[in-house]
Length: 318
Image (cartoon, rainbow, N blue to C red; front, side, top):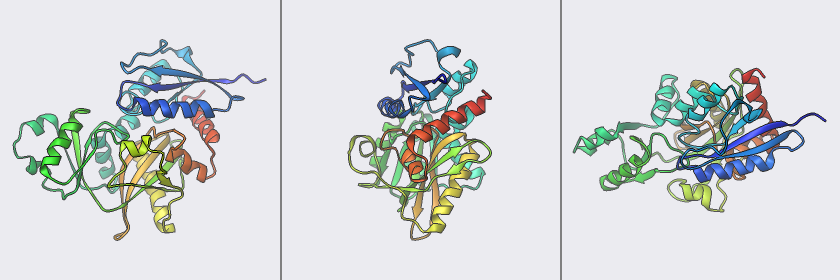
Protein backbone atom coordinates (compact mmCIF):
# COMPACT_ATOMS: atom_id res chain seq x y z
CA UNK A 1 0.00 0.00 0.00
CA UNK A 2 1.30 3.44 -0.94
CA UNK A 3 2.17 5.56 2.08
CA UNK A 4 -0.33 8.34 2.63
CA UNK A 5 0.72 11.99 2.37
CA UNK A 6 0.70 13.70 5.75
CA UNK A 7 -1.21 17.01 5.45
CA UNK A 8 -1.07 19.56 8.26
CA UNK A 9 -4.17 21.74 8.10
CA UNK A 10 -3.43 25.06 9.80
CA UNK A 11 -6.41 26.85 11.32
CA UNK A 12 -7.34 29.55 13.82
CA UNK A 13 -4.72 32.22 14.41
CA UNK A 14 -4.86 35.64 16.04
CA UNK A 15 -6.85 37.50 13.38
CA UNK A 16 -10.51 38.50 13.74
CA UNK A 17 -11.29 35.72 11.24
CA UNK A 18 -10.31 32.96 13.70
CA UNK A 19 -13.76 31.36 13.78
CA UNK A 20 -14.16 31.48 10.00
CA UNK A 21 -10.81 29.72 9.67
CA UNK A 22 -11.92 26.92 12.00
CA UNK A 23 -15.03 26.35 9.87
CA UNK A 24 -12.98 26.25 6.67
CA UNK A 25 -10.37 23.90 8.13
CA UNK A 26 -12.97 21.44 9.40
CA UNK A 27 -14.43 21.20 5.91
CA UNK A 28 -10.98 20.47 4.48
CA UNK A 29 -10.24 17.87 7.17
CA UNK A 30 -13.53 16.12 6.53
CA UNK A 31 -13.13 16.03 2.74
CA UNK A 32 -9.50 14.98 2.28
CA UNK A 33 -9.58 11.46 0.76
CA UNK A 34 -8.28 9.13 3.50
CA UNK A 35 -6.83 6.67 0.98
CA UNK A 36 -4.39 9.36 -0.18
CA UNK A 37 -3.87 11.66 2.79
CA UNK A 38 -3.32 11.58 6.53
CA UNK A 39 -4.78 14.89 7.74
CA UNK A 40 -3.53 16.48 10.94
CA UNK A 41 -5.28 19.50 12.46
CA UNK A 42 -2.91 22.21 13.73
CA UNK A 43 -4.99 24.81 15.59
CA UNK A 44 -3.13 28.07 16.26
CA UNK A 45 -4.64 29.94 19.21
CA UNK A 46 -5.81 33.55 19.31
CA UNK A 47 -2.41 34.67 20.64
CA UNK A 48 -0.65 33.10 17.66
CA UNK A 49 0.74 30.14 19.62
CA UNK A 50 1.18 26.84 17.80
CA UNK A 51 0.24 23.56 19.54
CA UNK A 52 3.48 22.06 18.18
CA UNK A 53 6.78 23.59 17.19
CA UNK A 54 6.73 24.49 13.48
CA UNK A 55 9.54 22.43 11.93
CA UNK A 56 10.43 20.69 8.68
CA UNK A 57 9.11 17.28 9.76
CA UNK A 58 5.73 18.71 10.82
CA UNK A 59 4.14 17.23 7.68
CA UNK A 60 4.76 16.41 4.04
CA UNK A 61 2.70 19.44 3.03
CA UNK A 62 0.84 22.22 4.84
CA UNK A 63 -2.65 23.45 3.96
CA UNK A 64 -2.86 26.89 5.63
CA UNK A 65 -6.61 27.45 5.89
CA UNK A 66 -6.02 30.77 7.62
CA UNK A 67 -7.92 33.95 6.83
CA UNK A 68 -6.94 37.55 7.44
CA UNK A 69 -3.73 38.97 8.95
CA UNK A 70 -1.11 36.42 10.08
CA UNK A 71 -2.36 33.67 7.79
CA UNK A 72 -3.44 35.19 4.50
CA UNK A 73 -0.99 38.08 4.29
CA UNK A 74 2.28 36.24 3.68
CA UNK A 75 3.42 35.88 7.29
CA UNK A 76 2.80 32.14 7.63
CA UNK A 77 3.83 31.62 4.02
CA UNK A 78 7.21 33.18 4.80
CA UNK A 79 7.64 30.91 7.82
CA UNK A 80 6.87 27.83 5.75
CA UNK A 81 9.32 29.00 3.08
CA UNK A 82 12.12 29.29 5.64
CA UNK A 83 11.32 25.81 6.95
CA UNK A 84 11.28 24.36 3.45
CA UNK A 85 7.80 22.86 3.81
CA UNK A 86 5.59 22.66 0.70
CA UNK A 87 2.33 24.53 1.24
CA UNK A 88 -0.95 25.16 -0.53
CA UNK A 89 -1.77 28.57 -1.93
CA UNK A 90 -0.16 31.81 -3.01
CA UNK A 91 3.37 32.74 -2.03
CA UNK A 92 4.58 35.54 0.21
CA UNK A 93 4.34 38.44 -2.25
CA UNK A 94 0.99 37.52 -3.80
CA UNK A 95 -0.50 36.88 -0.35
CA UNK A 96 0.69 40.26 0.96
CA UNK A 97 -0.53 42.20 -2.08
CA UNK A 98 -3.87 40.37 -2.18
CA UNK A 99 -4.49 41.02 1.50
CA UNK A 100 -3.73 44.74 1.43
CA UNK A 101 -6.55 46.64 -0.25
CA UNK A 102 -4.27 49.60 -1.03
CA UNK A 103 -1.41 47.60 -2.56
CA UNK A 104 -3.94 45.45 -4.43
CA UNK A 105 -5.62 48.44 -6.06
CA UNK A 106 -2.29 50.01 -6.96
CA UNK A 107 -1.34 46.75 -8.66
CA UNK A 108 -4.63 46.53 -10.53
CA UNK A 109 -4.44 50.13 -11.71
CA UNK A 110 -0.90 49.56 -12.98
CA UNK A 111 -2.23 46.62 -15.02
CA UNK A 112 -5.30 48.54 -16.34
CA UNK A 113 -7.68 46.35 -14.35
CA UNK A 114 -10.81 48.39 -13.56
CA UNK A 115 -11.53 49.22 -9.91
CA UNK A 116 -14.15 51.45 -8.31
CA UNK A 117 -13.28 55.05 -7.33
CA UNK A 118 -11.68 55.09 -3.89
CA UNK A 119 -9.40 56.92 -1.47
CA UNK A 120 -7.21 55.67 1.34
CA UNK A 121 -5.54 57.28 4.35
CA UNK A 122 -3.65 56.44 7.51
CA UNK A 123 -4.95 56.88 11.03
CA UNK A 124 -2.52 59.78 11.54
CA UNK A 125 -3.79 61.56 8.42
CA UNK A 126 -7.40 61.15 9.53
CA UNK A 127 -6.78 62.32 13.09
CA UNK A 128 -4.62 65.24 11.97
CA UNK A 129 -7.35 66.96 9.94
CA UNK A 130 -10.68 68.49 10.87
CA UNK A 131 -11.76 68.55 7.20
CA UNK A 132 -12.94 64.96 6.93
CA UNK A 133 -15.19 65.80 3.99
CA UNK A 134 -12.12 67.00 2.14
CA UNK A 135 -10.62 63.52 2.47
CA UNK A 136 -13.51 61.80 0.68
CA UNK A 137 -15.08 64.58 -1.40
CA UNK A 138 -14.02 62.96 -4.69
CA UNK A 139 -16.50 60.14 -3.96
CA UNK A 140 -20.29 59.99 -4.04
CA UNK A 141 -22.64 58.48 -1.46
CA UNK A 142 -23.07 55.73 -0.49
CA UNK A 143 -19.51 54.81 0.46
CA UNK A 144 -17.98 51.66 1.88
CA UNK A 145 -15.38 52.01 4.63
CA UNK A 146 -12.91 49.14 5.07
CA UNK A 147 -9.76 48.32 7.02
CA UNK A 148 -6.94 47.89 4.50
CA UNK A 149 -5.93 44.48 5.91
CA UNK A 150 -8.99 42.42 6.78
CA UNK A 151 -11.46 40.06 5.13
CA UNK A 152 -14.77 38.25 5.67
CA UNK A 153 -16.55 41.64 5.76
CA UNK A 154 -15.12 42.34 9.23
CA UNK A 155 -14.79 46.03 10.10
CA UNK A 156 -16.66 47.13 6.96
CA UNK A 157 -19.48 49.68 6.96
CA UNK A 158 -21.81 51.19 4.38
CA UNK A 159 -22.30 54.90 5.03
CA UNK A 160 -24.51 57.66 3.63
CA UNK A 161 -23.56 60.65 5.81
CA UNK A 162 -20.54 62.27 7.45
CA UNK A 163 -21.72 61.19 10.90
CA UNK A 164 -21.85 57.56 9.74
CA UNK A 165 -18.53 57.95 7.95
CA UNK A 166 -16.70 59.10 11.08
CA UNK A 167 -18.11 56.19 13.11
CA UNK A 168 -17.22 53.75 10.33
CA UNK A 169 -13.64 55.01 10.14
CA UNK A 170 -13.28 54.54 13.91
CA UNK A 171 -14.51 50.96 13.52
CA UNK A 172 -12.12 50.25 10.65
CA UNK A 173 -9.20 51.72 12.59
CA UNK A 174 -9.86 49.17 15.33
CA UNK A 175 -8.58 46.56 12.87
CA UNK A 176 -5.87 48.40 10.94
CA UNK A 177 -4.04 51.74 10.80
CA UNK A 178 -4.92 52.25 7.12
CA UNK A 179 -8.48 52.72 5.86
CA UNK A 180 -9.91 52.46 2.34
CA UNK A 181 -13.12 54.27 1.39
CA UNK A 182 -14.79 53.10 -1.81
CA UNK A 183 -17.58 54.70 -3.79
CA UNK A 184 -20.62 52.49 -3.87
CA UNK A 185 -22.08 51.45 -7.21
CA UNK A 186 -25.42 49.88 -8.07
CA UNK A 187 -24.23 46.53 -9.29
CA UNK A 188 -24.53 42.77 -9.11
CA UNK A 189 -21.83 40.99 -7.07
CA UNK A 190 -20.08 38.36 -9.17
CA UNK A 191 -17.36 35.91 -8.08
CA UNK A 192 -14.97 33.72 -10.05
CA UNK A 193 -12.48 31.10 -8.86
CA UNK A 194 -8.96 30.69 -10.22
CA UNK A 195 -7.05 27.42 -9.98
CA UNK A 196 -3.60 26.56 -11.30
CA UNK A 197 0.08 27.39 -11.43
CA UNK A 198 1.95 30.41 -12.71
CA UNK A 199 1.79 29.52 -16.41
CA UNK A 200 -1.71 28.31 -17.26
CA UNK A 201 -4.28 28.89 -14.51
CA UNK A 202 -7.96 28.23 -15.19
CA UNK A 203 -11.02 30.26 -14.26
CA UNK A 204 -14.24 28.69 -13.01
CA UNK A 205 -17.76 29.49 -14.10
CA UNK A 206 -18.81 32.76 -12.45
CA UNK A 207 -21.23 32.80 -9.55
CA UNK A 208 -23.42 35.57 -8.20
CA UNK A 209 -23.76 36.49 -4.53
CA UNK A 210 -27.28 36.82 -3.19
CA UNK A 211 -27.23 40.08 -1.24
CA UNK A 212 -30.10 40.26 1.28
CA UNK A 213 -29.71 43.99 2.01
CA UNK A 214 -27.36 46.71 0.83
CA UNK A 215 -24.34 44.41 1.07
CA UNK A 216 -23.25 40.94 2.18
CA UNK A 217 -22.04 41.36 5.75
CA UNK A 218 -20.33 38.88 8.10
CA UNK A 219 -23.62 37.62 9.57
CA UNK A 220 -25.09 36.87 6.13
CA UNK A 221 -21.91 35.10 5.02
CA UNK A 222 -21.23 32.93 8.04
CA UNK A 223 -24.10 32.93 10.55
CA UNK A 224 -27.23 32.85 8.41
CA UNK A 225 -28.40 29.57 6.88
CA UNK A 226 -29.91 31.36 3.88
CA UNK A 227 -28.51 30.69 0.42
CA UNK A 228 -25.71 33.16 -0.42
CA UNK A 229 -24.92 32.48 -4.06
CA UNK A 230 -26.29 31.37 -7.41
CA UNK A 231 -23.81 29.22 -9.34
CA UNK A 232 -23.45 29.54 -12.24
CA UNK A 233 -24.50 33.16 -12.45
CA UNK A 234 -27.18 34.13 -14.97
CA UNK A 235 -24.95 36.28 -17.18
CA UNK A 236 -24.73 36.87 -20.92
CA UNK A 237 -22.01 34.65 -22.37
CA UNK A 238 -19.88 37.64 -23.31
CA UNK A 239 -20.00 39.04 -19.75
CA UNK A 240 -19.19 35.62 -18.26
CA UNK A 241 -16.14 35.37 -20.52
CA UNK A 242 -15.06 38.91 -19.55
CA UNK A 243 -15.34 37.92 -15.88
CA UNK A 244 -13.16 34.86 -16.41
CA UNK A 245 -10.58 36.84 -18.40
CA UNK A 246 -10.41 39.60 -15.79
CA UNK A 247 -10.13 37.03 -13.00
CA UNK A 248 -7.07 35.53 -14.68
CA UNK A 249 -5.57 38.98 -15.28
CA UNK A 250 -6.04 39.90 -11.60
CA UNK A 251 -4.48 36.59 -10.54
CA UNK A 252 -1.44 37.13 -12.75
CA UNK A 253 -1.15 40.79 -11.70
CA UNK A 254 -0.43 39.85 -8.08
CA UNK A 255 1.68 36.83 -9.03
CA UNK A 256 -0.95 34.39 -7.79
CA UNK A 257 -0.38 30.66 -7.48
CA UNK A 258 -2.68 27.70 -6.87
CA UNK A 259 -5.92 29.48 -5.98
CA UNK A 260 -7.76 32.72 -5.56
CA UNK A 261 -11.31 33.97 -5.63
CA UNK A 262 -11.84 37.20 -7.55
CA UNK A 263 -14.84 39.36 -6.63
CA UNK A 264 -16.51 41.71 -9.13
CA UNK A 265 -19.14 44.40 -9.34
CA UNK A 266 -21.18 44.23 -12.56
CA UNK A 267 -23.12 47.36 -13.54
CA UNK A 268 -25.81 45.78 -15.64
CA UNK A 269 -27.09 49.09 -17.07
CA UNK A 270 -23.68 50.18 -18.36
CA UNK A 271 -22.09 46.77 -18.84
CA UNK A 272 -19.10 47.83 -16.72
CA UNK A 273 -17.15 45.32 -14.67
CA UNK A 274 -15.04 46.34 -11.68
CA UNK A 275 -12.66 44.05 -9.82
CA UNK A 276 -13.57 44.54 -6.17
CA UNK A 277 -10.83 42.37 -4.67
CA UNK A 278 -8.88 39.14 -4.91
CA UNK A 279 -8.87 36.64 -2.04
CA UNK A 280 -5.82 34.39 -1.97
CA UNK A 281 -7.28 32.03 0.64
CA UNK A 282 -11.06 32.14 0.18
CA UNK A 283 -13.43 30.40 2.52
CA UNK A 284 -13.44 26.59 2.37
CA UNK A 285 -16.60 25.97 4.36
CA UNK A 286 -19.33 23.73 3.01
CA UNK A 287 -21.02 26.90 1.73
CA UNK A 288 -17.87 28.24 0.06
CA UNK A 289 -18.62 29.86 -3.27
CA UNK A 290 -15.07 29.06 -4.40
CA UNK A 291 -15.53 25.31 -3.95
CA UNK A 292 -19.05 25.42 -5.37
CA UNK A 293 -17.91 27.35 -8.45
CA UNK A 294 -15.30 24.69 -9.15
CA UNK A 295 -17.79 21.89 -8.54
CA UNK A 296 -20.03 23.53 -11.15
CA UNK A 297 -16.97 23.63 -13.44
CA UNK A 298 -16.42 19.89 -13.14
CA UNK A 299 -13.97 19.77 -10.21
CA UNK A 300 -15.62 18.23 -7.12
CA UNK A 301 -14.39 19.25 -3.69
CA UNK A 302 -12.10 16.25 -2.97
CA UNK A 303 -10.50 16.62 -6.43
CA UNK A 304 -10.05 20.34 -5.81
CA UNK A 305 -8.13 19.61 -2.60
CA UNK A 306 -5.99 17.03 -4.39
CA UNK A 307 -5.12 19.45 -7.19
CA UNK A 308 -4.15 22.14 -4.68
CA UNK A 309 -1.87 19.73 -2.83
CA UNK A 310 -0.31 18.60 -6.12
CA UNK A 311 0.35 22.26 -6.98
CA UNK A 312 2.06 22.74 -3.60
CA UNK A 313 4.46 19.87 -4.36
CA UNK A 314 5.02 21.09 -7.93
CA UNK A 315 6.11 24.55 -6.74
CA UNK A 316 8.51 23.10 -4.18
CA UNK A 317 9.97 20.64 -6.70
CA UNK A 318 9.19 17.68 -4.44
